[in-house]
Image 1 (tube, rainbow, N blue to C red):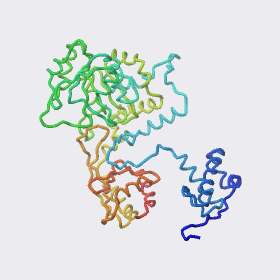
Image 2 (spheres, rainbow, N blue to C red):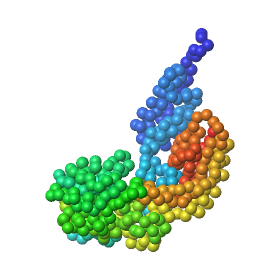
Image 3 (cartoon, rainbow, N blue to C red):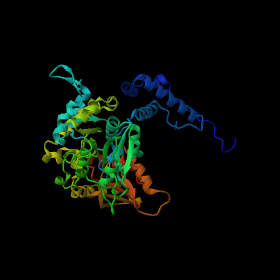
Image 4 (cartoon, one colour):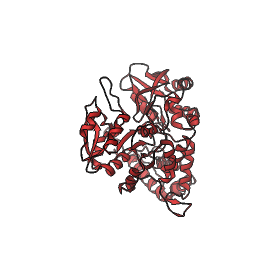
Length: 476
């Protein structure tokens, strides 16, 4: 027999009924059901059988074919197959409102309200006082009016939907005048001009990329003009020789021509962030007070609530928007409203907001807190990684994220991981993948030949869980 040809290995695999009747398999049947457990077991045994015959496509090693070993493999396969695709992670990217990681984290009051909404029927569209059908917007509209100064408000599933619904209602088949310097593109290549096209409106660009004057708007107004619109440049900044028409200057032109003025704030905030030591961002109330007839903004960014889009402004315009059949397609469900109401309620006590609103707590966290955390974690991570990497504590700059205050950064502190010696391959990329493979994935970022772990979003209550899984980072 040729030396490189091995005979099939004779492995006696247990029968399906013997594994299923074994005491160790009973918890699996109780958790995953007999049908799924049996089907998974049959597939596992088929692979082990193929492996024992030397099949090139086999993925399992049948060295131990005892009932205990097969059951252990079965348990692992069932657990992996039933693991949720949506998993909690540690966000150590340095971006607080990270779009890809779900943006704002909800405060406890909102989490509890959502849990109640999951367990019980709720008066979503039922007026308890009259015993008749109600309007789901009524659950939060009074709060929104109080916090923004608007006459009315409505809620849809995100801010892009809010802009789409507004344009489709008020400008379908007509022109919307926008400064060329405000034709923004948000994440995922969604652009304001594309949203206008889908809404059935015609974009009328005015001015130049860097400079737009009041006369540009005035000269563009025609019989077919439906709206004047300003779009907050939330994810970029134009500097140098620039000029933009501010809202207090544009509003009189809109009123004089009896044309509504809409403002898309993008992120949108309900309080002056400067009182908490953060850069100023125009609030919704300031925008309405400056003359905007309608304002659109997000619920899951600076506001710190669930994903949604809010339209606030004139009562007659909001009423028209709510009559649009598209509103039903874009409306939010009870879970969103259950989360939004308690978040809005927190804004009634702005002095307590930094401790109660998760997003603001993370944004205002002092660098000293992250520095102390880094000092605690540095030796633990260094020990876990071994001599292949060096781990240092270093100052880092965090960012707010999700298009909010794009040029402003927040002093932070974290761990800087570098390859300790020249090696082949991509040691930082390998480590980044290992961190993502932990039971609770750790998401950092690689820049300047360094893997950075910004600790702004790792709070003290999470430290034990984070540190406990470092043992799974086997030294390279």
